[in-house]
Image (tube, rainbow, N blue to C red):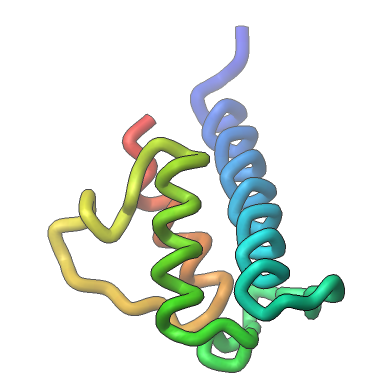
Length: 96
């Protein structure tokens, strides 16, 4: 039987992969390009190439893919500065 911590690590890995995949899809569509720059945990969101509309589309698309919006679930207003903070916010507010 899998431990709860193993399930959480596995779920977080899946979330991270889906966030990256969706980011790349939104980036390609929004920027009309084929090549997407590599994202690292310390990548500053404002320097990733997506503007505020692009991030709104990303969050909407992630809600469709993941089934939740952490910005709606969270009781606190939060504005992640880096990609790592963005992903961690999804982990923290995952309703599963």
